Image (cartoon, rainbow, N blue to C red; front, top):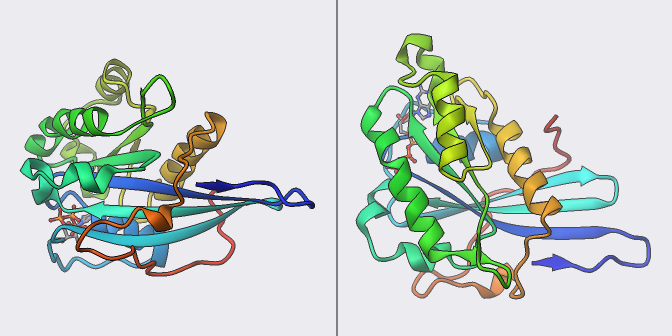
Length: 217
Ligand SMILES: Nc1nc2c(ncn2[C@@H]2O[C@H](COP(=O)(O)OP(=O)(O)OP(=O)(O)O)[C@@H](O)[C@H]2O)c(=O)[nH]1
């Protein structure tokens, strides 16, 4: 999934990232904000899976391409997730801070990912970051304290968590960058290029947009 350095030491990485979580928690909105910098209150549930591509000029000699797989919340009980998760090197799990049931579902999503996709000879779990989304709806709306969340992510094998808002564009780039840093640091890669990981019946993932230089700091 990464290409070797060329003579000038330029590297390109292509990472497949899963975005999962219960229905209506904001996965599509988070991706749209991250890739296109847009937001809409209009809700159109994703069917199956959708794709987007975000290019990050990580540093002057490194380009990171994130292929974001927006997996419908309704897939939680579906059998297709094994196919969708194939070759992923990282994931984001979302919940809606105003709906406890979506937080309760986080453990199920995490277990689903851990059981279906691993990396390296030791079959390690891929890094997963937890997004407490819709935090613009107010502090009182948040169903967990920061201490609770710190403990939860530590106990449940997440690499970290962020309060996000797709509406207010809060912490989305920060969370993605945090995940990429972890992937780069641990040199998580796959042998097969992402272009080869075509899902039967879906065709090749179609990038929605390739952005220019990105400031994620
Ligand atoms: N206030 C607020 N609303 C949000 C936020 N993110 C998403 N929404 C709204 O929540 C609804 C669901 O958002 P989606 O992004 O479609 O959710 P999803 O997780 O992709 O849903 P599925 O495709 O059904 O799994 C929409 O009406 C969005 O406008 C946010 O950060 N704040």
